[in-house]
Length: 380
Image 1: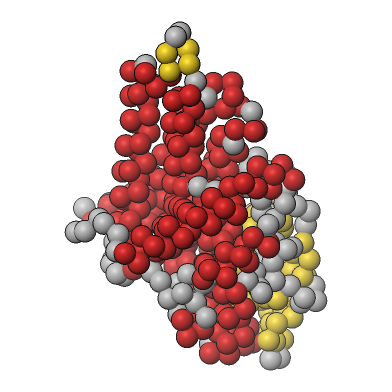
Image 2: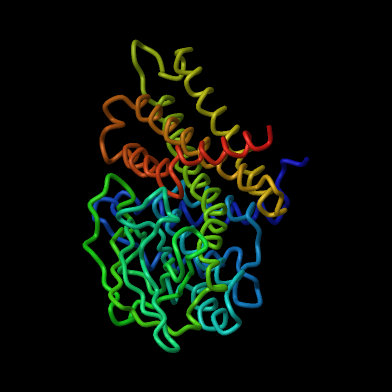
């Protein structure tokens, strides 16, 4: 096994890090405080090929793999985890269309998703069912050649500001096999949005409820075959879990970098903070935790690219481990800053707030434990 990057992968990471340093990091605190969704900067990133990282080049994408994707999301998250996380969700929808869409759907949406002309959102979670996603109640009733979608989706990133929504809705009976996926455009009659949620973090992207009141879509708006929606959603979440883990990794690395700089500059009791062995050990443990997380995340991403049977388990493991470690490292970095870490100007408290939600979304870390437990018990 080779844990080194190819020249192309290193160049991709360097490009994303330069973009994060130049266009994202200088504005991240302002975006957070103003609750500003930086669509213009997102589109600048997409000009560099980051709007369709894993979309085939035949449809305007970059045609890269999961390893390259996690490198990009980690690099961008060093500038702002919320910015990187939204871009990963947009890419998740684009990849779903690239993999499962009809030729008409691909031609209609993918080139514009890749350039950022269209922005996308993923709609699975509902007010009454979060972790139990297969119990969703949004309905898609057949009406001639159309479907009428009725229901609510909650905690939808980008909602209200984005242009295309992949909506999981029930076309059949109860359970996972009764769910289908639909592509719904923002202008569809009956589609509306709740207020932008007031959140602990992730303020650089809006989060709203998506409300569907007999939203009429053509039958050809169905993504994949009827009854395959839940399978498509879970498949997308395998990749989404590596993406959100990468965002945690990037945010935590930024926090550690800030802590290293701060402890080198700050003095107490006549010496620099980083001359105290206890604080040296703290920095070492944080660096070790991140490197372990990075190595395992690459392992899970590689398994997903290779379509290995253990990929789902590894993605769940990586999501749980990396998001827990990332939050812990960021929190310890705040502690090393003392009172200054609690001030917004230093950027540490924002990272802590942004990374906390990563332990909840894309499947809570409790659900990740459940996925892993079921797998290891079945193998016994």
